[in-house]
Length: 190
Image 1 (cartoon, rainbow, N blue to C red):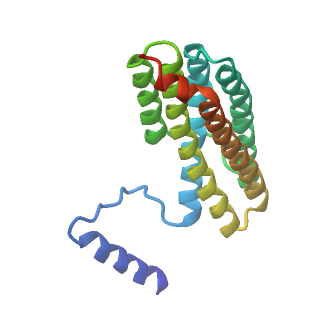
Image 2: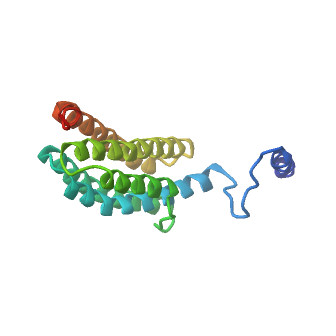
C-alpha cells in the first residue's frame, strides 16, 4: 500500500507544471542517491589529481605552489578513502562524471588563460581553487549527513575526515590570498 501511495505521489509531482520528469534509473531512495553522490565525488577527486598539478605549474607564489602540492597528496588520499567507503558499503568503486566539477575545472582553465602569469594569476587561481573547495565541502558535508542517516558509521567517519581536510584547504587558500597575493594583485598594474 505504501509503495502504491508513493508512486501516485510521484506521478502527481511530475505532472505539475515545470516539474522535471525523472529518468528510468533515477534514485528511488536516500541510499541510491548517496551511492550516486559517492560516484560523482569519486570522479571529481580523480579529475582533481590532474588539475592540481596544472594549477601549481601556473602559480608563481611559493606558498601557493606548496599548498597545491600538499593538497594533491591529500586528494590522492581522498581517492583511497573513497575506495574504502565503497568497500564498507559493499559496492564497486566507480566514478560517474561530475558535471559540476567538470565545469569548475573548465572555469579554472579559462581563468588561467585570461590572466598574465604572476600575482594576478595567482589570485585568480586561488579564486578558482576555492570554488572547487566549496563544492567539495558541500558535497562531503551532504554525503556525511546521508551516511549518518543511513547508519553507515564507517563511511560517516571516513567522509568526515575528508570534509575536515577540505575545510582546512579552503582556510589555507584564504590565508595565502590575504597574506600578500591579493594586495600585490591589486597594485599589479600601477
